[in-house]
Image (tube, rainbow, N blue to C red; front, side, top):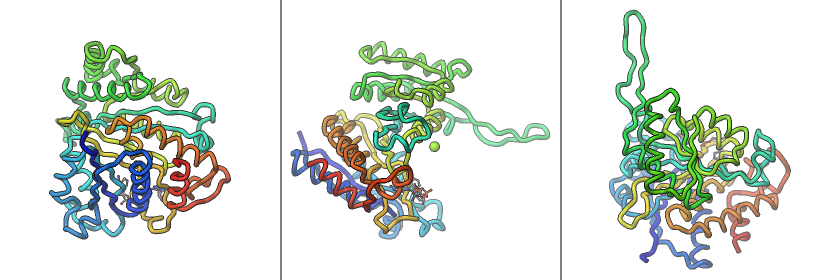
Length: 365
Ligand code: NAI
Ligand code: MG
């Protein structure tokens, strides 16, 4: 097997600060677990604009297409707010997502026991929660035509179109079943087949793919509104939830907040399988560049560290090593180590970004 390759794009603000801790963890895996990665580091966002006049160079884009996985910190900041739209830091990220055709957005909602009191829900409802919302990201009502605001008689009409082709549904369904096989083997598909034709087709295609290719995975269907209720009532009933772009936008934010702080939330965006069978993949924390705390050693590196754990599981087939890392994070939180963003609810020992990295490395050892 060739050495697995990683492109690391720390980006702006707290991006480089949290990524520095991930780098130490990657080095730990090389030294202690014999898991060596071929790592390239490059610029994206505002720092790339500063160096090259563009938020993502063609060379970086080409590298992203070629590696097994991309790990990104965050982009943007007040320094770049007045730049022309075409060179804004976010454009670098958007270009990556678009050219890699990352149609499957993975947002886990994972609640570590020690942080269960951060949730607005009762401890027993969220403690130990570990579910994955899979959102279709490149089609649906945010992209469908016709769209616009038109004039009809003496009033204005706003129009958007929900449109899904069979192949778009089939590929996100396959992603869901593949991911479920690496987890608890359970998929719940959510749409509104009761009131939307696109939902009827969604349910048909998901069912067909299931019967033909993944009969070993347990599949259920739910209307998305009922799904929202069930997510807030008893989220542990789910494993993988697969849904469209619009419902996924809402449901993933809802699920994320079941578990507390922005500094804890990882994500992944996956595309089509490459020649080696691995999906194109971009892993990144959900949070942004947090200019308000950048340069102060206050950033919580866990979202970025858990994004790397997702890479281990979904790009490198190292679910056991991902679990090792997640267990280390859990142990450190249980011992009371807290970056400032996690200090609100209860006591604990306040640590810096690097202090949190130190603690996680110690727990890995
Ligand atoms: P943000 O996520 O950067 O920050 C929101 C709040 O959460 C801030 O108070 C911040 O201090 C806190 N926070 C975020 N991550 C944290 C962490 N790891 N540890 C501790 N506290 C954390 O969102 P905001 O403020 O709306 O945007 C700031 C900049 O980031 C903007 O330029 C925005 O465009 C960009 N951004 C970039 C994203 C990306 O790269 N994917 C996503 C969201 C925003
Ligand atoms: Mg959203």
